[in-house]
Length: 385
Ligand SMILES: NC(=O)c1ccc[n+]([C@@H]2O[C@H](COP(=O)([O-])OP(=O)(O)OC[C@H]3O[C@@H](n4cnc5c(N)ncnc54)[C@H](OP(=O)(O)O)[C@@H]3O)[C@@H](O)[C@H]2O)c1
Image 1: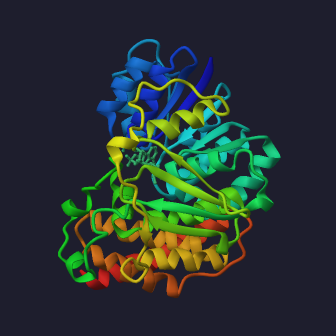
Image 2: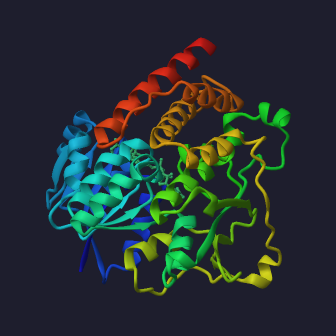
């Protein structure tokens, strides 16, 4: 049996992972779960999967959880240190990293340093610390297998290719709910409108990032780090059907692509079973029913965060860290209804114009830039409300 710990088990990726593990219960056993505040769901998960270790975000929730635990009692820990401990738990073979935001970075690094296979959904850790994670993976014999559908597609296309034969990697984007709207029309869109993604059912932060197309920007930076690509080797096309999950153009003119129905359980399962493939109970892709696959230009003027991400590909690492931090704070403020959707663009742009520059050698350097950028973004938000 392969032992799995899921960081962010109560979230969208976490729940999908547990469905996959349940279906493949002959092969995988859940030994650890980590979650934030959704205790009700975590109880149910713990009862069904009987993990040995559970990490919660807050001490008071851990105490509450402990009181209601049933036999066999798991070890219950809390805080960032607790989540890191669950990530490096000695029995883990695979750690699914699915906490949202830079909060996922330390536990992801803990799993990598412990030499685990990391099924990586938390794109923010690769955006901010990709080179440190890759260095640590090489040193400790860890594997980083992408879960994001685009990166899973690229990973699969590149499996048998030599890096010198790759000309371009093209990420597909659904375009989100506002792709067809003018900037003026976008100004009128509410939080509820932004949370209605046309294709994917995801957590709130990544859904808002999809509406602003920052999600694709983060994915560009994630792809650059994961696959060691030059800025000019990366591009984005809008593909509203979300059937082609990304493409790789080879130097002989061949274009490789991975296609499937729109369901995260497919890339999650692949990250768990790689290099093998297992049967899936999901419906097969029916191309005759899909009929049409469209591809169009992504408008960087209308979606300025995507333009900033393309710029970040060329800039130093501090820029990506600051871009991510400013975006996290602006999205949080939008989710709290403190600012409008369109304000996210301006706040991120203004914040990173004056962001800290330092040499990044450790995670602490990254967290320094992150903290300073967050402060600046919060000040700008305060001035608006
Ligand atoms: N959803 C997708 O389809 C998708 C696709 C590709 C990539 N991703 C990436 O995967 C990551 C997760 O996305 P998601 O959509 O699954 O997010 P989500 O639904 O918001 O779930 C986030 C999870 O993290 C937990 N969490 C938050 N803070 C925590 C902390 N301090 N300690 C422990 N657990 C904590 C949450 O717990 P509670 O809910 O209990 O508070 C929840 O289980 C993101 O980086 C996203 O960009 C998602």
